[in-house]
Image 1 (tube, rainbow, N blue to C red):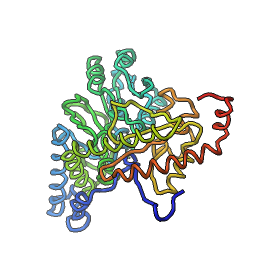
Image 2 (cartoon, rainbow, N blue to C red):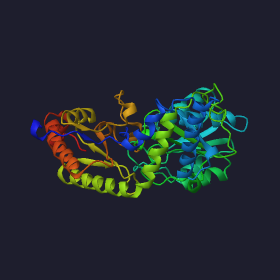
Image 3 (tube, rainbow, N blue to C red):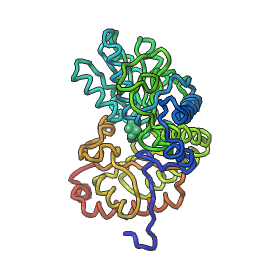
Image 4 (cartoon, helix red, strand yellow):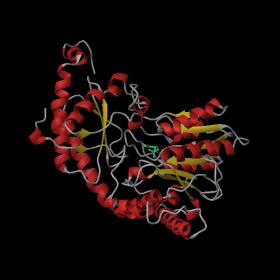
Length: 400
Ligand code: PLP
């Protein structure tokens, strides 16, 4: 195990969250104290805050190809997903009560769909192939005259697969259904333009692209009218109640601006590191499965199943060496159930249990990747030495 002399802290969990960029923090700071006004107040303090919110909204809109009137600030990705799905379902319930989503969505989408099922809506969960990709054929098969909404994520949080959202959206539109996409993982990692994708609603969240936690947005195309979700005051043009989190929306706009400016450069650096890490792991550790699609994938994501061991044991041992990564998604880390994403991709329970997600960020270095590979080799071999499954495999009692 690591000695003090070689101990490093290596953060490889950027899909869980990212650190706030110092330039983002500096942009936010005045709005906590000096410019603390409520953006809905009539006086000068309020006007100062309202101007900052308006500027942030216009900047955010421009960066994703939207109009400023199509951006609604929320408390994050979870709220935006809940709003899009339940809001659209309730608004359209007199037209139809059928919704289509994929079986690998984030819990924010899946749980919203489950709630709707309990209230009399019908939901079809599209299967994915062994790489975690949704097919256009499956969507065509699932669409019905009473389908009012299709929601498929742009990129998956666990295995990083990037879905053919533009094609899926065209198919949904031809059948008369609205289309929502959860772009939380994609934003800042791959170019995202609502014009190009053609979607009706799109979710994103600042803390995944070096912005603050607790702020996100729902893009709602002009003319699309989901029911309100958070009701209260007249904020967000009466569509979402609650005092606007001025520092956070200012921070999100700055973070998105920086992420967009440096997207190509950051993505190239991150992909190079990730590819190096993947090739080293595959070369140096036997009985490893690289989960997900090799090409249609976010640059930061590497998801492996290490046969014969538990992902949690691996994660805890890596943590003791200063390496942060994640088993399944951070949101489900309270649960011992294997990941619903990996099961939907057809992995066996035991294999899904042994999986770990590493997600690289702009500040990671080759030294970080080398350190993680070195520690992985040590820990996997230590855990396999005490694994009854591995012993049975070596004796030929079980196969992989
Ligand atoms: N959707 C996806 C794909 C995510 O990865 C996450 C967070 O991990 C969310 C939604 C939830 O976003 P937030 O943490 O802003 O609520």
